[in-house]
Amino acid sequence: MNRLDNKVALVSGAARGIGAATASLMASVGAKVVVGDILEERGRETVKAITASGGKASFARLDVTSEASWNSVIAHAVKEFGGLDVLVNNAGIFLGRDFEEATLDDWHRLVAINMTGVFLGTKLAVPALRASGARSKHGSAIVNLASIAGLVGSQLDPLYSMTKGGVTLFTKSTALAFGRKRYPIRVNSIHPGVIDTDMGEQTFVTRARNAGTNDVAAARATSASMHPIGRLGTADDIARGIVFLASDDSGFMTGSGMVVDGGITAQ
Image (tube, helix red, strand yellow):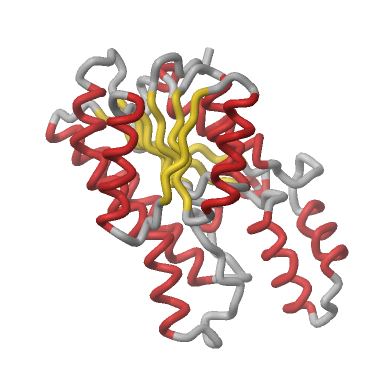
């Protein structure tokens, strides 16, 4: 179940957090993984850890806002491992600022990474994904990292919510477009709740600041209590969902959104 034997996966923002956990898990279930990130030292450390555990991985510097960078990394995947079967558009940032205080430069940076990066990765990976998908019963796969903030409103960062809502509908729209064109590429999104990563820590800091206490520990406890399951999510929780969506076990899924949020949006 959920095997990725002989598949080649490219994960953006894979140097740390959810991206690193996803790259590691994918390699452990048979994938050859390209770790793409602008954080070169951390990215190479992730690759080193994967290969030390017997997995196959390679690092490539990836600036998701650059068309040339995407083309270079996709070519790296094809040259290094022979093709591309899975694209995980994971790279993203959280602004953590009230939209009335955000500058236009803040907005442009948020959009460049959270939305333009997904657009470029999807567009530029299509030829390689289509070629690999034609050789697979269930096609190739794109998994986009959205958020529960792309399904319901966010008190902490409306602009982040706006970008993730865009990723949510871009996922559905590209799934439909590929279906119309008869491209063998499935596209699905995953919607994490509050995850205990560096980005999650940013939400605790923002919550503490908004409460006027700057008590980050209390904000963390509040965030955990909001989840009916009784805890915050981990990077591994999300990685498992991504691997499922990348595998042939999800072969009849496209245009779907998998919510992995500890029950927070069920309330």
